[in-house]
Amino acid sequence: MASTNIPTVSLNNGTSIPQLGFGVYQVPPEETERAVSTAFEVGYRHIDTAQMYGNERGVGQAIKASGIARDELFITTKLNNGFHRPDDAKRSFDQSLADLGLDTVDLFLIHWPLPTRYDGDYVSTWRALADLASDGRAAAIGVSNFQPDHLKRITDETGVVPAVNQIEVHPYLTNEAARTASLDLGIAVEAWSPIAQGAVLDDPVLVELAEKYGKTTAQVTLRWHVERGDIIFPKSVTPQRVKENFEIFDFALTSDEVDRVSGLDKGEEGRTGPNPDTFDYIPG
Ligand code: NAD
Image (cartoon, rainbow, N blue to C red; front, side, top):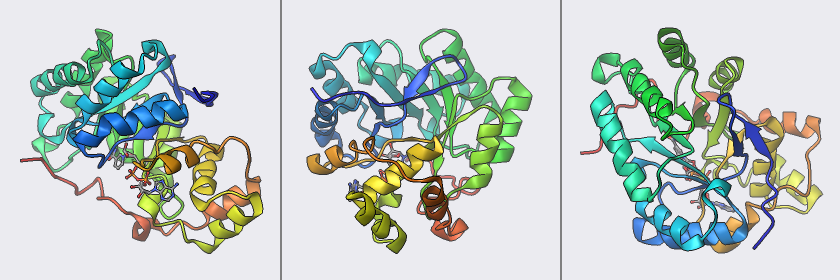
């Protein structure tokens, strides 16, 4: 088994999370067990799934087949958009545990704030997650795609501060407002689509740095996230890339190089996913 010497980030609930994990968005259910098993073989111990991805069972099968001790794994899942009512949130959480074959998850997130749905009430959803944390079945709870005003509202109204905010961050969307608002509240930042689903990989600045370090542009981009302290979980179903994305701890960018990559930010134009202020999708 490969080395699992991955840096960790401390969370505000006293636990810690491996800074590099493996994301399974868009991994088809029937391929998930194989993809996650490959990631475990490479050395990943942190898996990021979601109810909406439809592949929690495959993640659970890979966990079971791996024989890896539960306390060596960090498993995150997320509440589906159709289950924001507190009772639905709790019921769907039970289903996630059953599908994953686990007694607890390490992190449970509200996937999207949906400010235009549920009469704008994501606060009672957040209270439901706080109950799951109190009874110990979610070791940590957090949010995803929360804008600064969403973070302020849930913390002001409940006093419960999320452990993480999982938001779109990559060199073309550095998302500084949401990132800074999170960090200022002691919330760790998880950067989703860390390589912008491939959109940044031909950028001349990244190509230049990749040549300098003898790395790929994907590795340089992932290393940039690591230097900035964010948590990442790139996705690939190609074993060679799963391995490549893991090999980012044997080189470092200078602080000037980190700033240069941050300077590639295109603001809203760089966004690859939906805007959290208007996204209102509920699966049928
Ligand atoms: P990503 O930035 O990780 O890019 C994945 C794509 O890039 C792959 O499909 C593959 O085509 C390509 N790729 C991966 N490694 C490569 C390499 N080394 N070289 C060349 N190409 C490579 O995008 P993502 O999957 O959208 O994001 C990662 C994870 O973030 C997801 O799997 C999921 O866990 C999470 N996520 C969360 C949200 C959210 O709303 N919370 C949204 C999107 C993604």
